[in-house]
Length: 418
Image (cartoon, rainbow, N blue to C red; front, side, top):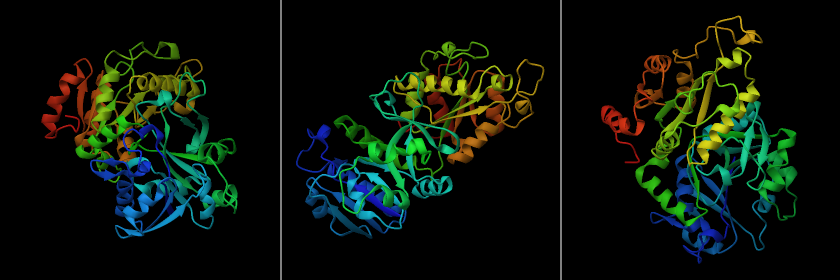
């Protein structure tokens, strides 16, 4: 697989910071963005990287040369702008391409990303993640097998939506590059001309990851990323490293308890929970929802309706700059006799709280260190699941932002955001 960095951006929105260098050369904590990217690739064994340059590209080549950090650097120079993808015509061949936007600070387990791409067999795979401003971002919704089913640009109308955004890291199969790009380069937009058309055919996959990826689209984000690098948050979120998680119950914890929530209009956030989740996001904790939903087994809510309920939850949180990294659902209910019930879910499972199945599944998926994690809930079922999984339990009746400092003292750690 070839690694390619699109390093030709002008950075019009951050021109007030530096207008005399290309966007990837903007410095964060005294080092160019592009240098952080190359370091991440070098740490993971890459020996050759292709840089696509244009505007002030000589600044990049003068800084890095043809060899850097044990890697060979190759340059594709756009004499005329070819859009965000046109230069890929020069890379037609037999290799898949790891394509990286040049304005990102990231630390991602790239071997895990590549394995997902191979397993899911799409023509392309985009890395998606939640962010703190989904309301003005392009949103990708997925279905079975991680295939992208909807691509909503920020200009398109929307009501409830999943907080899943294209992070700017992509894997393009050799077959796609050879088919989509002509021998003679022409101007192409990666999203509009290459990726979005794959949705209808079901050949675009999404690799959803909580790892740190942040673009430098505005001057404000430069300062945010600088602090994340200094605190160690960027490196800590790489899934090759053990993660810390906050497991949150849903009904009665994140949203108001209305009994069995069967209608989307009944979902309302509990006061203060968006702020609490936002603090956990900033502190480097994975925020994992673990929720019993017997309404599926009872036939009172369909999977499609539950998806919409969770989209509303993510939308409401996103409007306040907060997000959850994943939602684990137990649809089972062992008791029978409900009108319209679904027999396939009437089982005594291992995921229904107070059993710890959902927490253990999340730990396996995201390399979570349960001993450094905790759970917030509102019932003895939640307490039992936390104890069975070996995580600290907090009752939501206590003010979480008051309890958290004591929790960190007990664990012998300090949160990154303090």
